[in-house]
Length: 124
Image (cartoon, rainbow, N blue to C red; front, side):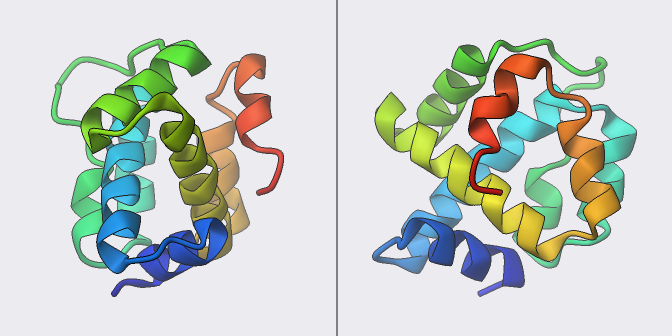
């Protein structure tokens, strides 16, 4: 289990590593769409294993503008979860990222969020 998966599991108290991996993969995929590719690549350098691949955007276009509700809906779809669980996933993964990334890298993510995303950052 990677350091990030462990941190995510602690933040959400997931019952299994598989659930923590699913949540992490879905949120990192959403972040990869939401933030600049260069920022995603910088973050990937600090992550080990699969999470380093999960954050890299699959599309060559620039970042996609997503409202916070669209972001959470994307996570729900990626994780095959309901939106209540997706909210928990986002909060857990952002909390995990705040634990494992250097502060400047984590702020590089959050600085690209519009103000409405602040409600996702309450516990980070």
